[in-house]
Image 1 (cartoon, rainbow, N blue to C red):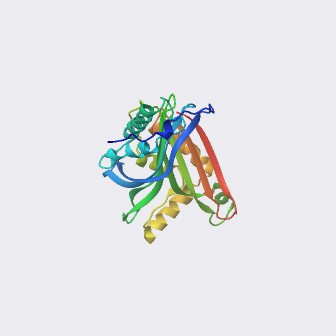
Image 2 (tube, rainbow, N blue to C red; image 1 turned 120 degrees about the horizontal axis):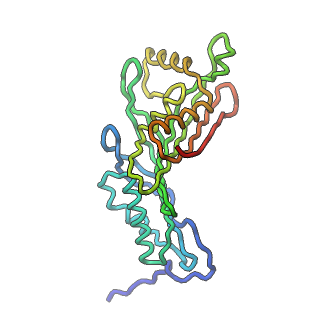
Image 3 (tube, rainbow, N blue to C red; image 1 turned 45 degrees about the vertical axis):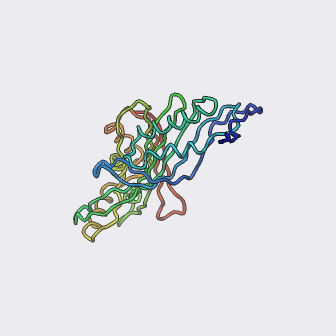
Length: 269
């Protein structure tokens, strides 16, 4: 005889306090996602999954947040799959509790793009810290996030110096937000390209001396402040993506100062 075990999470809650996010963080999970060039790339995703909780329900069913992932282990994962996954999680939660609209998921991972050195053409992978975000909170949205290492040469230093100029390495962060019903694929590769083209240079894993010469000369012919980089990215988003909300940041580790240089903007194009 099977005896139904008590469902403590579904016990009544009398304090009357709605919880905006209840769930799990730092869940590592293997996934495969779309790659613009190679079609598919295998990643280890770090996931945060949350649902909102009605003020009359004591707890969420955390096992549902994980079990819904199982069917995606052998599928190529895209942004629309994330939307479906989150809706399934919300549905499972609602079936055992009190229906509620709120649910969100965040995924972070290292994504690799093979780049050829400018002169030797030697190829090597460069890793980029990337992420996806989905929210079902009305009206809902989906986001692609990239963090792109770049190099910049200070325009002021170049202008006032008889020889050389100081340069720095920075991180460009681009976060683009789409409506849930926007079916366009915004490729990580395209956002990385926009970021690298907006700075003095991108970075490479493998370079020969002839490549170093080429990159250094290119950087010094294209000096950029952090302000320039951020504005250049916005122009790139306008021209190459369009109809998107964005947050763009650039933070440079200064080579002659103990502090960093920073610029940020947000808007819609």
